[in-house]
Length: 320
Image (cartoon, rainbow, N blue to C red; front, top):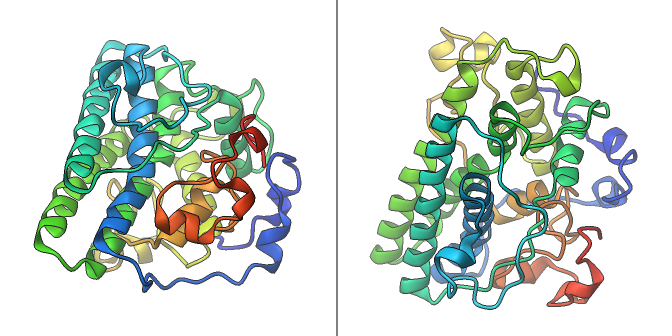
């Protein structure tokens, strides 16, 4: 189920992302870098911006700037986010998540000053690309995260969990009490959001995803997790809604509402792993995917090719 093979076969089919870096890239799985506590929470803001825009626009039809015009610090508006066709309960949940993300951004900005919002690619085409790569074939009709509640929850499955693992990975390297307390609070709510999304999908585990024929919701979550593991390149950090018994809690269950390691502790990811997953390139130096011009903050820019530094004209169409 967890086939940790390279994704070159999938990557070559999608011209929007260059597959060659994965072939020649020697990935690091160490989170030990010469960075500060502030650098680590600034890096996390990239995911908080992504979640805020995706949740707010889908539930209210308005983006972050409509609620707080200062948090983006002049960063460009996202591409492609729009109001989703959600049922009332899902809409209410996602709306609450969106407001929570505003709070997260305010908390980080008030304590550390914050960073500009990166360019975000939240288009239907971008989500469809990631889903197609996870499944291994092109969706028909094209996967649209904004079309209905199920598609939106599947799309949401991709993002908050990555932030959760990032906070878990950052905590051992934090020095100052106030930053530790901030990250602990952020992690608690991010974990809750991921748990809610996974539970809502678990309730629909046997439903077929129209765009992929006979693939069920549970199977698609497994494939999305496989893809994130492959892109991250540091082993199993991600699990779908069902796992082999040897990966289940105490080896006694195959259900997997919460993704956790053999001790039922949350998995961790380094900033490099997160960049590989969110760029969709498997390379922290090659932007694409959700952050087509690269993530912001000192950590992300340490790895990024200089041609992407603030050069939105080079990638504003969502491509490399």
